[in-house]
Structures are given as structure tokens and as C-alpha cells.
Image (tube, rainbow, N blue to C red):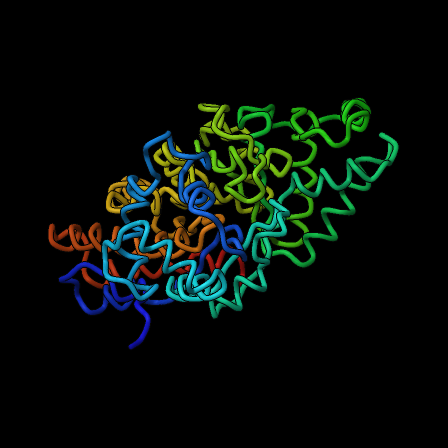
Length: 408
């Protein structure tokens, strides 16, 4: 019997053309690798919990929208009945082994290309090539700016050489990448001064930075310099610049990857709060408008309406709903409906934002298809969109926009 795929789980009824557009392979325009090894129940629950922390004593992360959806939708992919208990699910997962679980779930997502953020630099995570091979898809790398800067800072160079080496290293890494990404929201917040910092201020800040090179980059001057250096490289190579936005704070305890935090790899948690609101990027986005560099706002929840507004106002701004789709599960239609209220259809893309657990990759694809199916059916039923309109919109969001923006 063929393995169930997210393709097979759409709500009905839908017009044939709309169903076909939703079933078409999608481009996952932002994800991280998933674990290559088996994990304990505690480790798995940290992977599927939105905060990356253990559930309170006496509770479980399976009692969340995503946890319930895993038991409902992922269980059949592993050969179980829907709604299998958490214990049965995890036992089956262990019996199959991580490689087979990853193969089934990544392939079942129905993705034709994974764009993989490699900035976490954790050996336990699959590489882009491995994600592609197991998912039977193409795969390309997204370069995490802060990881490049960390490597440069730890190279032992004088402050006067910092800017030049950073520029050279960014250019070298960009040569094999499909996009550049920043987690400035989780370093200094998105309300930074949008202007390019002076050379003198960069050298002075670099001197302070290099005195403690293993610390996390959080100096606003150097964050701004990093972003503008990335803009220069992105403009030269025709690459989009992605920004992690919203309250997504996965990684507070390392996603169960190593028993420790991943703060050195770029995710410091949700403490920045409102400073991750993409509306704070307005000045920087406006400054980039004449340069032709696409800006992609990732995740954004619960500020996805602000992101939709920026996408509506600025011709070079794009948006995805990210992991909120998987974590809201049955409520995903609500999130997608709010994006569709304002964001132009040619500005929205699909990105799972998955991390650590292949279940989240599968769920994001499934919940995107199911949630969007509900929204499209409502618009058709109300006579606002034709069937052809709905099919075209589903195709644009699922893959067409990403192929155009990333030149796939």
C-alpha cells in the first residue's frame, strides 16, 4: 500500500482545478534540518514544543495543536491508525528508525525543493543535500549571516581587518547559496537605525567585539554593518535577504539537540517580544527599495498582519506564515486567511520553518494545503473568486512565487 502523503488529505469538496493546484509539489522556501538520529521521548517532545522546553511535570507536548495533529496525520505515514497514542506513536517511530521516519515524512510533504537554513551548525541535523535526498527533492542552502560573522570574529584578526574579511567571507558563502538570512530580531531587535554605519564606528565596535569573540553578536552597530554588507553581496548576486520575525523562540533549550542552548547559533528565545515585529523594519525596507534586493519576512506570527501590510506597500517585500501553520494545525486556515486579507497573492510563499522533527515539515505542508483549501473554498462559495483565480493563487503561494524570487 502506498504511504500516505499530505497530498491525500485535503478537505472536500473542491473544484478539480483547485485541488490539482493544491496537490502540486511545493517549494519550502525556508526550513532547517531535521535530526538524523533517534531521540528519547523527552527529546522528541522538546522538538515539537514551540518553546523547545520540556512540558511541565505531569503534562505532555502531545496535548498541543501540533501534538494532536502528529497523532492524527503523521501516525498513518508511519503505518499506524489515526489518533494512535503518543506511546504507540513513539514506539513505532523508534522501531522504524530516524532515517526511515525522516524519509517517509519528508517525502510525504510533497515538496519539490527545500531551501535549508544551515546557520544552526549542529551535527545532529541533516544537511541540505541529505534533506533533498530523503525528501526526493532539490535542496539549496540559505546562509545565516550571524553564523558567518561568528566565524569571522573567532578567526583572530585585528579590528581594522574585520569589515574586509567579513565582506569576503559573505561573498564566498553566497556563491553557493540561494538566499541570505538574518536573525537580527533575536540579537538587537528589528527597530535598529536603518542607516549604514560609518567605518570608524564599525572599527570601534569590532574592537570591543573581538575582545570576546566567542560571545554572541548583539552590538547594534555591527548588526547594522552585517546587514548592509549582506545587502551589497545580495545585490551583486541577485539573492533575496530573509529576516526571521515574530515571537518564534524555538531553541530555548536546544530543540533537544544537545541538551544545551543554541544561543550561540542565533536563537535566543522570545525575550525580545515586540522588538521582533516586522513593522519595525519599515525604515530599513524603505532604504532597500531602490536597490532591487528582495526582502522576505519569515514566520512573523503573531505579527503576520503587519508583515502582510509591508508586502502590500513595498514591491520588494514578501512574506510566509512559517511554522505557525504547523503549530496552529487545525487552526491554520485562520492564519492564512489573515495573510490573504491584505498581502498581494504574488508576495506570499510557503515555508515550513521546520526544525529538528520531520513531523513538523510534514505537518506544515499538510496544514498549509488544508488551511488554504478551506480559505479558497470559502472565497469561491461566496462568489468572490473564480475557480481559475483560486487555482492560480494556490499555485503562486505553493511554488510559483518562490521559483521566481529565488530563481529556481
